[in-house]
Length: 312
Image (cartoon, rainbow, N blue to C red; front, side, top):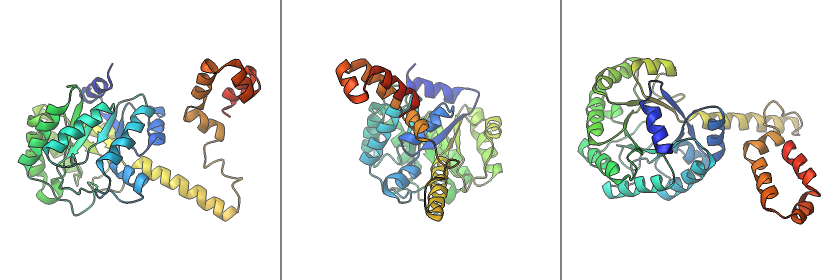
């Protein structure tokens, strides 16, 4: 089954689709290995990973596209791109959608912020007029070659205009051709329920965003599912978890003066090599290298097998 079709079916299922946010290939692989069915690209994580800076519209489209393309290749589950605002007007949106689709993504987020945008839970956001965003969604739906490619229309109107404007825009974006409506930064459990009550009975599929330390109170995935949400992204937790793990290991190494007692803080060498696919490299070598080349590299085929099993 195509990845686009997989993602669309997961969003349409009765069970809520939980999509953790990947910031690089390694985090995407670990999301897949943990058992999640799809990966959300995290623009917030990309900015931190690639630039060491906050999510304030500093990344270019080319940077995001190239990073996303590598992540798509690294996993076997559907990947939803973070297309920010589409990087311009309707013409730019067309290219954005087409490039992400050609890169192998199963869908894309497009938001109604003014460029340069910023993280949806930061203050100081601005949004474009609703009609301008409707045109962008229409252009996005027209641009995709595969009709199962998911257009996830995000509205950031809550902060400046309130919940009623969020509902008004959600309905308009759905009518324009979006497959999913991303309601960014509700500020209470009551708002989460309000959006569901206004949109789900109309057949509109909606998405929540559970951001650690953000403006929205954290709900369980089952609670969101019970309200009628089709999808929940968890965009920054993997980034924060990786940063905390690295912080603890580095501080301990600095304090101890060596790296001999980090077993409870790090993945072992052999396990990590297996995680990132070293055994598959060995398989390719065994399949295509000549016997003499294998002997030169490993001493014998038997030793190659030992190295494969040990993850060295």
